[in-house]
Amino acid sequence: MSYLARKKTSKILLLGLAESGKSTIIKVVIEGKLPKKGERYEATIDYERKQKVIAGTELTIFDLGGQTAFLDRFTGELSEFIFSGVKALVFVVDSIKITDISRAKYYLDLSLKKLEQFSPDAKVFIFQHKADLVPKNLKSEVRKTISEYLLQGVKKDIKYDTTSVFSDSIFKAMGDVYAEASGARKTLRPLLETFIRHNAADMAQIFTKEGAPLTKVENISKFDHISLSEVQEFFDAVVKRLAHSDGESATTILLESERRVFFIRFMENGLALFFGFPKDRLREKNEPIPSLYNKVLAFSSQLTSITEG
Ligand SMILES: Nc1nc2c(ncn2[C@@H]2O[C@H](COP(=O)(O)OP(=O)(O)O)[C@@H](O)[C@H]2O)c(=O)[nH]1
Ligand SMILES: [Mg+2]
Image 1 (tube, helix red, strand yellow):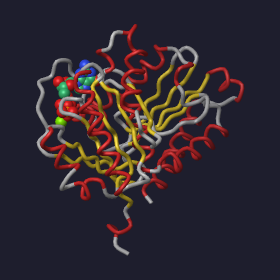
Image 2 (cartoon, protein in one colour; image 1 turned 30 degrees about the horizontal axis):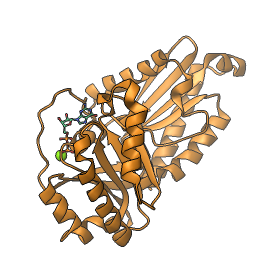
Image 3 (cartoon, protein in one colour; image 1 turned 30 degrees about the vertical axis):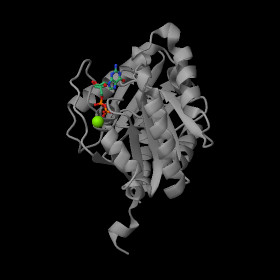
């Protein structure tokens, strides 16, 4: 069997009206660029394809141009080509351009119909995007209004997220899409759980190197129980690493806060491992940092060999 025949591939569609934010999401989450405020808008002509390998699966992300003429082609003459073999569809809507909402709903419904026809098992996500532009006191009302409108008459189970490229919401939401489309949730999570069980980690996550989380482990990959300054340190380190990235070699970063030791390991395969160990538990277990370091390295190579298969 040839290498090509063996490689797992998977298709993700990113759809939505023009200027809803699709190309920006790709730039930030897939290409790892920092988002800029007030960037000039450049329309995507027809569609663009981006490739990304996650946990051994090659994902192809289609950024479909949002102009009416393109949308009509995607949902019309090209629909079989576009909607066949899809693992996940992400429909992006603007949180504040409420005048466009009925046109968005029209294309959402049409897309769902085509998806039902050509890829009935695909997962569907709605990103209510540019959530940073909604005033805080209106956030829940806007979410309720837009989600109820968009989901009217929809039978398919849809994951609804409010997102913005100016917070980690877009990374979380895209991480979910990756995990779903690549099957990473099933392969990575048990490994991570085993590691946690055998070691004193109380924080653990596997990210793409741009920062999209791929796993969910109860009580441990939810970062809401640690202080903001600790998370900040982590993300600063990721950003610094990206700035100096040659994209080739693996590196490990060790950070310490008052209460925890953190390891961040960037692997050659484009994933990043993140662990937090509480210092009091390390002392209890008599676990010195060099031995912890070796365990993280061993886990990393185990992960590499599994996701390259
Ligand atoms: N405030 C804000 N603006 C965004 C966000 N995402 C994208 N934009 C802006 O929205 C405009 C359209 O984005 P673009 O990605 O080109 O839209 P597309 O037509 O769907 O590909 C650009 O000016 C972006 O800078 C976001 O999360 N918040
Ligand atoms: Mg675009």
